[in-house]
Length: 77
Image 1: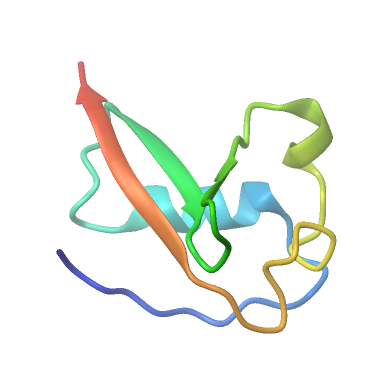
Image 2: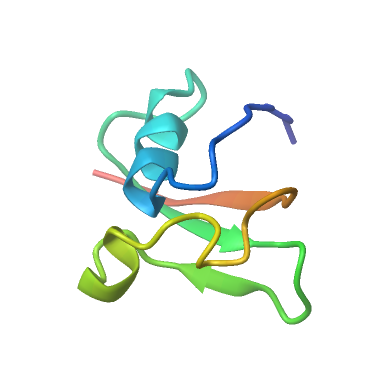
């Protein structure tokens, strides 16, 4: 398990977060990833492909001012 840290502004979007996750060297380019808000119980799945969440601000998704997300690599093509 590796930990990466980054600060985001409240008006950044879930798409911005997904782009950051994809830029991490541990995430294969062709991998399918699952992003979860692990600050909450139960964990909330965050889906950047969902139109309602894609452009939602991190503030609106309860990921700001402080939160932790988990990234699960589900499969690589």
